[in-house]
Length: 326
Image 1 (cartoon, rainbow, N blue to C red):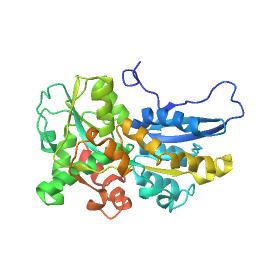
Image 2 (cartoon, one colour; image 1 turned 30 degrees about the horizontal axis):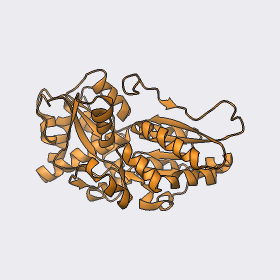
Image 3 (cartoon, rainbow, N blue to C red; image 1 turned 90 degrees about the horizontal axis):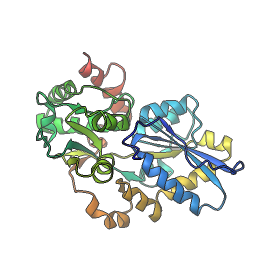
Image 4 (cartoon, rainbow, N blue to C red; image 1 turned 45 degrees about the horizontal axis):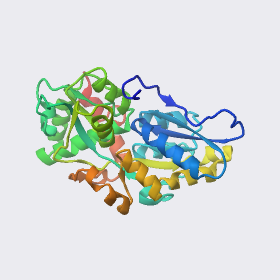
């Protein structure tokens, strides 16, 4: 049965096979919509690894997952939605502050973007960001305080609004109107998918592209459509070895090999097959028909770094809190 058609628990544990008592276990703490990706990726990695290993997955809102690691969840690796969440783990002393230099592309093995998922026929005729502020439009998006995907949603809308209004005041007014149309803020992206798909709440889901493609092509073909807005954001999920945990558990090299495999041709093809945009130019060329060209801004086009983004928009009492205060 489809994992999207039933309620999803916060943690998925896979790869623990009976009789593998002596197998080395690796824990990947990840964000919500990578569940299907890492089920396939883990199996491929285990097949090419010489020694028996077991791999566990933990999923939830990216910010919430980072807090869990800081509070003691012994992740060997983290594969989170925004760099800021891994920075938070680094500031807690669990991994190097230079973690982005450990792997290519600043430790972002794949990218994604934010699109609109609407019901068949697009009954509310939602075409671009401006339509999300119209009266009577129900917008489903998770909470940026706990979800990395929600922060990308927010920044994509903010970038659009800045381009249209040319002022921060205008952008704030746009975001305020948008969030006035949001009936519920789930803690993670998969929770918002469940709200939209299973609970039938809202008219449009602000979704990771990979999540939207999964729903419209595999899970519910013919029931949903993807709307690509005039502009969106280049989302760059990031990965890192949690050095302190991996050293203690004796999995440091295994953890490095695991994340390195994401950059291999095989790993990149698995990434593309699960609707994430590969960073490998050659693999991206193989799957170019899958991903629609789209004007994308970067977070760095808006602010110098994620610390600034967090402080200005998502810290307690910052812009987001003031916009959604009811």
